[in-house]
Length: 125
Image (cartoon, rainbow, N blue to C red):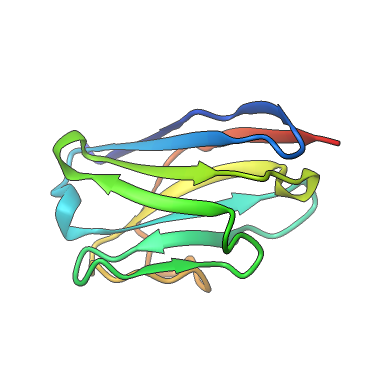
């Protein structure tokens, strides 16, 4: 059974940091592109960052460039999202997703076949 399980969310003050984890099981992790998306209340889900398994290319949404860093640990089947200098507008449910093509994009959800249940991040001002 394919599973993606996010963890690491919580409540943090503006300017603070969090590290989200996405633990994968049930598929060959290193063959998949992995992305982080987020959905704020009343808004559409948006891509945050992704990492391709084909060439290791990393992409960030403009809104998080310079503040967020995505990394992967193949031995642990886990992808991380390190979030620094958090802002109230980063408040959202964060999801990880897996693309079997190995590619990565933050502009569309369509390629992602597998999704986690999400983890809440709340940034207070």
